[in-house]
Amino acid sequence: GENVEQHPSTLSVQEGDSAVIKCTYSDSASNYFPWYKQELGKRPQLIIDIRSNVGEKKDQRIAVTLNKTAKHFSLHITETQPEDSAVYFCAARGSNYKLTFGKGTLLTVNP
Amino acid sequence: NAGVTQTPKFQVLKTGQSMTLQCAQDMNHNSMYWYRQDPGMGLRLIYYSASEGTTDKGEVPNGYNVSRLNKREFSLRLESAAPSQTSVYFCASSDSGDTEAFFGQGTRLTVV
Image (cartoon, rainbow over all chains, first blue to last red; front, side, top):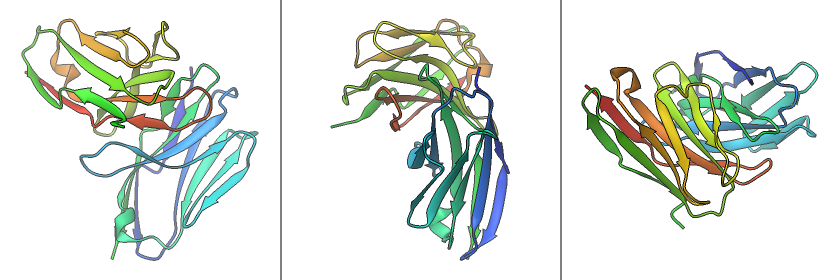
């Protein structure tokens, strides 16, 4: 089955710096790669996603890149703000609609 | 639209007791999922249902059963609760294909 590895598990940056979170997946049939943000005590919510026919996608300060050959994808947050502090999860979904998550990254943005 | 609704929000069980977690979605989604979330372990898939009438095991199915009652509802049953099942449980749903999965608000379950 699909295995999603996510690194780092914790990340601390200064406000205004960039943050990068990386994920790898094992199933070459996976074709959809969402990223979720979870604030303390709340449900995960989608922040950006990318499909297998696209190499990069950007939405304001957030961007995601996908390398299907290497089976890895990354989340980039620029100009970080304290409200970006949360746990971020990557995920991969295969052709059987099974949605597998990484273990998460705790991002702390220090003012 | 309420989105994905889970009940209950909190539950305390004694070891060996049984219970069913309920999940309903009003977005006409085909796929539904049950995850558990433990500190440092991320979101682990228990069971999922790609479409009405089908269910499949995820990463950690032992000790659980599911029922896809209809297109809207997907329940998770613990037949004999164990302390290792203490966790936060999330239900989610998505449409077929490459679309966003929406999560319920979670159920915090404690087994003593």
